Image 1 (cartoon, helix red, strand yellow):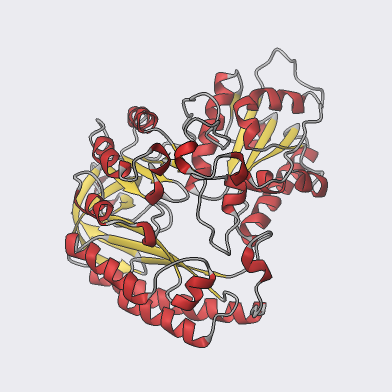
Image 2 (tube, rainbow, N blue to C red):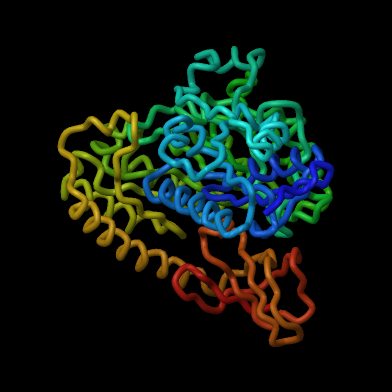
Length: 469
């Protein structure tokens, strides 16, 4: 197929994998590309280049990223796009290694390429070789002391001059990045090595982006980072989030603000109070427990235990009895005993969480836990995942049933059909985007995407709910 004229706008399709933080990165890339004269298209078959924003967190996500790149390469071989480019966490984490092992990708670009993404992409389309990033520990690129980072160059996905995002969907909910990177040293997690040290965005920039998102029709802001409880520590004010939340909630057009990824050990009382009692901020607590056994948590280089976690939940519910609470847990961690699993199960039974993600431990390259003794075999890990997942499904289904009779505010996210028989789906305040289930609203006549409707919960199926206006 002959190459198109260089004078014609070059078309780019973005494929986003992984978490909500990656969604923000993709929209920032889209904004840069659009400002640089590229045309964004939805279908990779219609594009000159496909950018796959990869995830590099766990084995399953890495495999999904590689499979997606290979599928795009197959499309290229069939006469589709002229270039397949890997960006995102997998590309940054493995860089030159990924480029060598995956020649089907025409380029592997790192975070430092983002401010110049248009130039990089034009070079790839012109047949030039663009160097992949060399794998390195990005925590070393900024000072150890958080307060010394303000004057240093920020070398993460948010680096470069401010850029207006280009929205890639019409959802009434949008992630809004608070910070990048992480200073914690969990023994199982490699994220800080490729995302870098923790760096907060300035409140003025966060607010400006919130106003822009509201102008685009966004009604719910979903604040994301690797550790939202640390926001502001590098700006000299650890309670900056408590100050920022009411300002975000006051943005014209924003109906509600939600905060993700809270570290239990860092969740100070003033932040609990702000999340539970600020008008416009939903009482929603995305708590990264990871386990409940104190022994396992210490090996994970984390803090807490069942008593401390249950007291935290009690303090939340004293302020907001109907608060939504979700978490993730890892089972099969090296050295985990049957007694540890039983302790986790006992905690989950007492905690009454709305949603729990259950993950089986797997070694991550370069982490401390990779070298731990007492590794469980794959079969043993899988058995524990199945066992805890069964329990979680029972507990969260019961928790959803316990909510029947509650009055909730549902943000409408999709409407199919019209009149009384319209299928209307959205989320109640205690349900986070994509991972916490949905609420179906009966008698949805007249409702539109972006509306917030008060309804009574009348049914549940698993974590999904049914509400009646």
